[in-house]
Image (cartoon, rainbow over all chains, first blue to last red; front, side, top):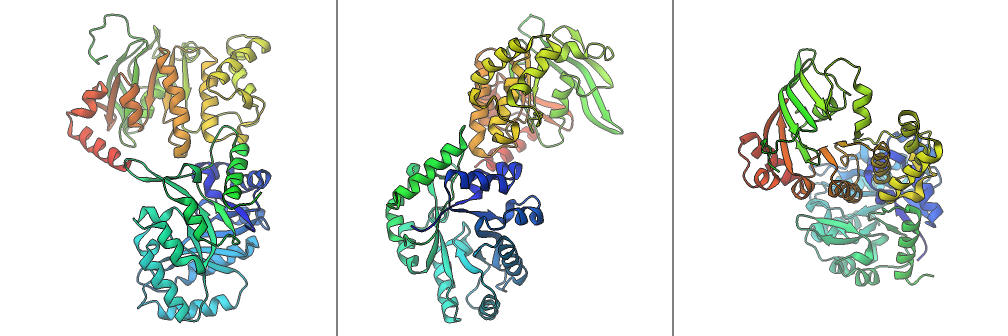
Length: 249
Length: 255
């Protein structure tokens, strides 16, 4: 396992907004993470925060969908995501497919290929928690279409999000393993009223089997709540847990 | 445990005919409320219903134009002369913690006891460590608020209030600025206080807390107390349509 990151949302939205992403980044690095995933939706002062995080982020996560409702490529969202990733000097931009539609998004995929060819940031597509951008069918249609359009996009495989949509994460892992270039480690539990993200060791899902089905050499990130009286110790313990699960010392 | 006055002892908090305006807007209308010592009250209601204003009147963070407020025998509406006396008896915890950022956790807790209670530094620190231990963060005493999580800061805020040995604790949405993972640690601290017999008024939408801890749940809307009842009755058989609507919304939003 080459790189272990922390998605900064793991520290909690309220905490991230209170402390700022730089504070949380420093804690993550101090705990032993190799880098962080910066969250676009949780920036208080994007210009200042992005400048302060330059060189620390391995991934910029855009809150916007790559395609607008209706299927058109959201060029504004894409350009802003690429601009922010470049500002951070982050090698990867993570987005969900949004309103991608196999029939109506063909021109958008061509435009996407041209836009991506002209810049160095790698776009990774994440399975989110929405039916249009998070089910097995939706993502299989997207990856087939992007391949047909001459693209070779990688996937951010979120281990937990499948549960929100009633999908089988193991089936998804086997289906998408060749595309996976980044893994969001996330355990899940079913509360009476909703799914919640939890550490892997507390997960009700077959997380070890899912991890085994995914490539080990791609970057992994913790994306589940990190909280406790000694946050540094909690973070260190969770990093060790993921490393151990991946057979790393 | 009912809101009726079967208990003949003098209430520790009494509001009679309280009316308050912000300019032309009436934020509290005809508030009558009696609270017995040791009673735990949860106040809920939609945004803008006057619930935060109501509890802020109890320690005179807000003044009222009409009506009478008596706290632990101290008349609050008799000009400003009793304010310090009441605030010494009433602790308050805010949504945004309101700790002094330039002071350590220990200094945040010792400031008021040294200034208002005349404690020496050593006495104040002993008391502070006692309450920081009680809220389970004595090891954070030397840190600054910005180094703590929201849940930890709120527990410090509770400890700071307890250092003044208040008879009454007011909580104004103490968990609403926290991530879900941190709500429980604050609620657990509050439950501990309730079990020790503290008189508590808590504005919150944590209905699980209301069910399990409150003696009485008060629902406010449009500046009025619309309904009040013990939790089993309040949640099981709300009488007012506005209460039913509110509970329907809030319970579904938590599902």
